[in-house]
Length: 473
Image (cartoon, rainbow, N blue to C red; front, top):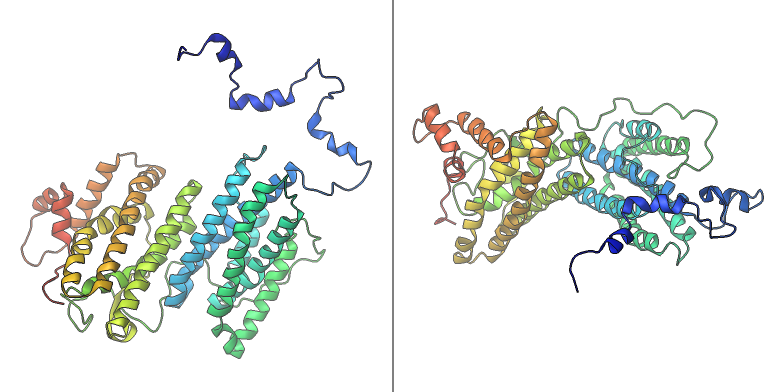
């Protein structure tokens, strides 16, 4: 049989964009086929308010609202992470961000399977106003309590009601996605109930939280609830009880007051007891939380990017938290108190050029970390420290993924900023800028010598790497 398509076969091929045209077309051989079939349902119930089941357009409306609201919520959560004066919260919230993004991807995939779903994921003006008010809380106690105990709990009820309204056969694909999402939303609320226990232990804080939660309930009522179809009060919402509200993605970040900070990696063992030893690799893992605030602000501020960008960025942020928590756990297992015995490099100010910052993180810092991190695996095994060796292996696995993210998204971000150079030129420029700003103690290098080093990834990484001694444990 010929592999070439015949003219008859070619005429029989239905292009995807013709399906809607065919669906609307008139068929004179079919008796009783009316025109405008899409509006037939409006006349079938004889004045009743609606069908006892959900129609396709009902799913489109509900999913569109869910997607835009949830995207706004996860972006707002990211913007608030830098306001959290708690290491534990800073390194736990990104896990929930990633989970929220996985929910969004599932809902969006189902949404795109439905006709009439070709609309953006950005929130409507009404939802933007709701999110702006929700984000103007006095502190993380109020914000997170309102976010999880009011908004997420209302969302959970709405998702369960949506699930129960679905027909087990008509709506089976939608049911499948909702059944995967609902238990995880419930677990998020349970997490918050434990994580925010301190908010209830201080009477003054507890009163402020109660007032804020009441205000958030009023905001939800004003927008008609999660799906926008609940009765709305005639009176305007009350005035915000916040006295000195913070904003998402602040100019200055708030660190955990239990930690000691510095603007550099350690110079001596007073700043880090493991300085210039193999175990400093474990400390390097622990320091990765310092990138979290910047990644969260990037997540909050990035606009006009594909949904996949935010999913990758959420995963990247969560990974940095996991690496830091792995390092902290291992330091404790080695007999240290991380908050007492170490100082931590932290730059608590928002950058003005996130494309360049993201490129430097992924294409320079993380790309150049493989030599020391992968190189530490065998020395750890030789010293009998299999747990630290495994930690380095896991760290390298994730860092490779992050470099892939950088290769993919850094040029996209640069083009948005008006820089259309290819990735190779962008990265070379980052290396040049980085190495020109460095001081080399062992030898004085001219600018020309530094620029020559920047032309090679290997030479650059070797020039900027940390001084370590893997013969000393």
